[in-house]
Structure formats: structure tokens, C-alpha cells
Length: 115
Length: 453
Image 1: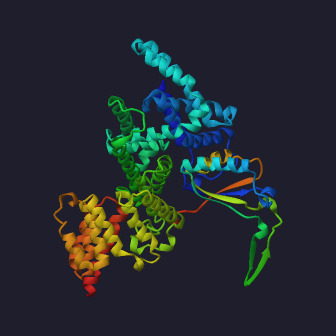
Image 2 (image 1 turned 90 degrees about the horizontal axis):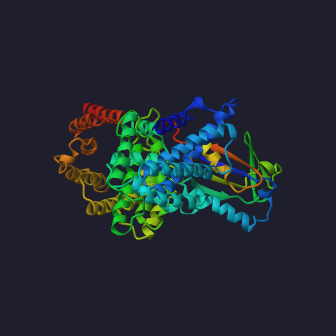
């Protein structure tokens, strides 16, 4: 199955200061391990929500909301697409990630609809 | 004793939730023990290949390495539900297996005095085996050696496939049997025999070099692609595709591509699988019937896999492997992937690529595929000429796609009655139910066209 991992890093993910070189190296090492295990399909980091936009739909009306967004704890700072055999496997991989804060969400991607 | 414990742990693994099974959704009242079991199953999937590879390096054979790894798994199943999953489960499993290995070697030593020296060497190797090293650093070479061993040409194709899924994919015998729709005992026997054959042939646990490496790598790629194909075009049963097998093969391919990044054909086979897998969702209709390439809704093709496939193909070509057999097939698949609508397909390029395949590895099946491409590029009459030359080909005697292709060409030429007969013959030759139904539908359409015409 394919899962989407959303990194909700809280304040840290929203700050404009880039992660320390050590943190980047740790992340890189972890990501390499995932790639070598054939798990990573895609990975990406997002700029802080300051540069983001939201579009709210209400019937025919469209409202544009400029960043930064208030609910910092829920904001996605990065994502992964993983190929795993179960949510449990994704969970076990994620537990090994070198993070000391934030919440990471694992969601299964719908595939092969109608199969 | 060992065998009973092995069976016990396989049973435990088989209980785990299966994808797509709606009844196994999250159960809030799940006990801690069940949770631990699920964690163990997931950890096993992550760690088993590295574990078996690390142990095989020390003990020299897959059979013993796998038994030791299974014993460590049984220990985890006994201890973790009560004590909790350790912080570094991989290191825990390796440490436990290592202790068992030392015990086993001691026992062997007592039994076989003459092997004392070997035993001592092995024990010394085990004692000095630093856990971090075993798990983090040399794991690449160990894994590669394990892949080469499981795919050794001394084994039959079936045995290679089963052993690979078992020791590298971490699948249970039951899961492999289910995937291939054969009795569990058949797979169990196949694996036991494969291990015995490897031991009897004194196959060394190593990464081969030179000319041997080329031949052995070809055997590895063949196994991976066989697994993929069994999932992609199920040869028997009620499913037209079994995506789980495709996913296993892709995973193995992606791992191999990282282990031997300079081998162009590895990227070639990965490219081929990624691009073909991009169509998995589109090649099955609402009631499970096959949808052929030209009838597929291309919006449903998986762009991510196409992108990955094209990148892998580029890697193969950059490494000078554009004319490798898998890279060529991937290049053909890429022609389809690049065409957003079927009519934009670059058929003359596909014909040229098939010409190259036919030069490299001429076969009646390649010729049949080339005929299809010629039909699209230059019209059905030119293609029918090629196909007619294949009609008496003994290897295609029971190949359902020959009459299927011929029927298609005859139909385009307005020869509906002959086309109908070909589709019916094709239907009688396939054991795959949805595919048979598709061919019978085509036959009925021809009959209707004839009535109308």
C-alpha cells in the first residue's frame, strides 16, 4: 500500500530558520535508509505557511486567505510518499525517524479503485 | 523442536491484518498483546532480510540463517508482548539470533568433532561481530550476497522465486502459496528443496565478480521480473492482476537498484516495472475485467510511477545500457507512457525498438509484439503477414495471445468470420477467467458485425 506521511512539526516547521546541519544530516541518513529499503516513492519539504495561500469554497463564492496560518501545530511542513505493506510497517519505520518534536500523520492513499 | 517453533511463529504472522480487508479496521479495544504482535509482524518485514543476510554471512548457508532468524522472531513473540518492543528491535533480533548461533555451533561442535576447527572460526567470527556493524554498514554486501544466493541458477525458476520472496521479501510460506494459488505444502517443499540444493552445490555466500557476476545478475533480474509478471498478468485464477506481487517485485527492484547503482540493466528492469505498474489501476474494469492498453483511461495512469520509471530508464541509458533487453522493453513501455492519448503513440519508434529487441533476443513472442506495433504504424495487412508466419510456430501453439492478435488484425481487415474463430480459439487457450471472457466478448462482437455487415 501507499501511504502519505505528513510532518506537522509545529513552531519549528513554521520558522524561517532552516534546520541545523546536524539535524539535516540525521534526516538525510534516515531518508537514505528508507530509500535503500525501497520504501520512499517521493519526499518533499514545504516553505512556511507565510508564503502559502488558502482558497475557501462556499457555494459559488471563493475566498482567498493569505498565510501565515494560525493553527501552527496542524500545519504540514513536509511529506513523504511511502510504499509499505501495512500501516504498521509505516509506523515502525516512522518511529526510527530522528525527530524530537512535532506530530507525524500516516494516511493510506486510495489505489486501484474498483479492483 | 526447531521446526515446531518455526511453525508457531508463522501461524502468528499469518494472523496479521491483510490489506483491503474491511473487517480488520482499527479496533480501539485491541489488547496490548495484539498490538505487539502487529508491531512484530511489521518489524519482521523490515528486518528479516537484513537479519538473514547478516547471519548467512557467518554461518554460510541460508537454511541455518533463516532458522536462527526465525528463532529470534519466536523469542520476540514470547517476550515483547509482555516486556514491550525494544528501542532498537533490529539490534535486539540480531543479538538474540547471534546467541542462538553460538549455541548451535557449540552443539554442532560436540556432535562433529572433525569440524571443530571450522566451528571455532565461526564462533570467533560471531563473537567479534559488532552489532552496529552487522546492522548498519556491511548490510549492503550481505543483502546482495543473499539476493545472489536465493536467485542462484542452480535452482529452478519456481524455487528461486519462492526462496526470494521468503528470505528477501519476508513473506510466509502461506502468503507465497496464496499469491501463486498453489498449496502451502508445495511452496514449503520447494523452499526446503531449494535450501538443500544450495547446500549440496556448495554455493558460496558472496557477491560474484567478473563474468559470473553478469550471468548471476541476469538470473536475479529474471526472478524479480517473474514475480512482477505473475502479479501483472496472473496466469491462472479469477484475478487479472495481483498488485501485491507487483509491489513485492518493485520493492526488490528498488532495493537492488540502490545496492548496485552502476548496473544499467537493474535500472532497466526497475524502469520497466515502474511504467507497467503505473497502469495497474487502469487495466482493470469495474467488474474486474481486463482493459487493454488502447482502451485504458490514461488519466488513471499513475503519473508518479511513470515519472519514476522514466527517471530509471534515463539512469540505465546514461550508464550505457540503452540496448539492454530490459531497458529496451522499458523504452517501449515509455513510448506508451509519454502518449497522453493513444493516437499520439510513436509507433514507428516502437517498431524500431522491437527490431532492436528481436536482434538481441529473437523469439516468437517478440515477433508477435513487433507485429502489433507494425500493425499500428503501417496498417493491419503488413502486420498480418508477420503473424501468419508465426501460426505454425510450435512454441506459440497454446499461446492465447497469438489468435487474439490475429483476430484483432483480421477484424480490422473486415474479415469478421475468421476473426471470430480466432478470438474463440484464444479464449479456449487461457486459464485466466477475465481474460477468457474478454476474448469471448470480442468473438461475439465479430459475430454481430458480420450480421450487421
